[in-house]
Image 1 (cartoon, one colour):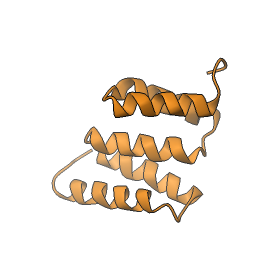
Image 2: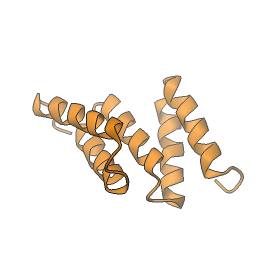
Image 3: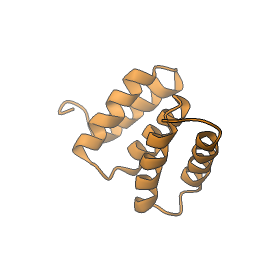
Length: 93
């Protein structure tokens, strides 16, 4: 990721995510986190992606990490609650 900034990588990842290219988005979110492990947006968006992919346990863990950075982020609270309710309905991941 030395050729683009973290902000550029996040923007590109979000574009992939919104276009449904989840593998590409996930790879970029993870690259950002490799450089900045506490990067709130990357944690939140990777958590959302995990939830969308049905990986609710991973989603909850990522969103919990994001909340330790910014506990006032309402979108993370909502997404985390959604993932938790989906998991309680039979998701084993």
